[in-house]
Length: 374
Image (cartoon, rainbow, N blue to C red; front, side, top):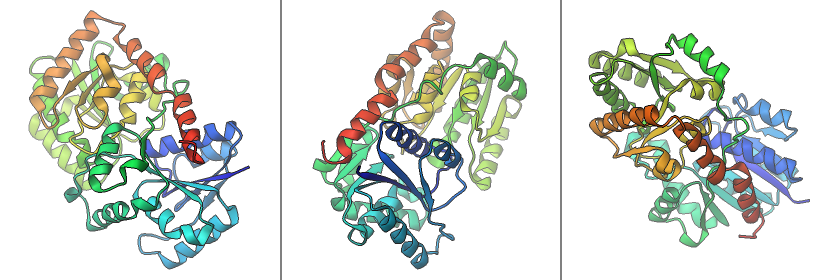
């Protein structure tokens, strides 16, 4: 049996990490010999893999500048596993898989790229160098999997070989992500949101690409039209950026209507607590897991036209230009009206995810590329 290794930094809570875990577990149940190699332990999804009997190997990177020892340990682990293929996730694992390939038996290399249209001037020099190196080494990959058409187009513009880039949409576990009535009541009670209030939420880490600023500005505009609305931001991030956003919320006069929920592990309940899910990203999105997961939980969505978001929501959602608070507020009003007129819009959103973005479809497509059967 051919051995497949998934290579990643750490299984923190995020879209790419969730997809890695979902894919590894599904391939394991189909009989594949799957291993996961991580730079760091302690991710929120580690236990899920261990429970599923997927072997997890931790290199034990000591920090950003732990290089030589880390590389030696990584090579030794991969030589011991002897993978026929390595499926690496995101920039640094992609680069290292290409660099170390001659030392670990020339396995087939499958890269995963998840973003689209990144604006690297917002990020530090190391991230900019990693992005540049990833483009330079992209010729060494056998297959490059983008999780969105926007991601494929962006990769080609960066110099990735067109003939090697394929699109495999993310797959959403609709058995896990489903409407949870009990969880909705519990979470809304925790947040002190009444049944009469409409709760509008943004799920995403506190990162400039998610454009919480536009979301908050749209929320402020919406409060001039509707008095029954509350807002929540779900996700963690840097303290400095969080403070900046809190100052903005205070200046906009929405502090008493806004909840900073932080990261949560009970995401089906958190999604279910919402009445509308929002993606206000201004760049960088490929396939938004947060939007697809919310739809699977029967939550209608309002999204900016970034990445493949408009394709995900189809006619079940509202789509606006990025960085336009007025347009976003208008789309939220439209969606509130649609919810009141058509209570089936939430279930229709779930049907779209079940039909178009299933785990089964993602796994079948992935199996076809892993060992050369593209």
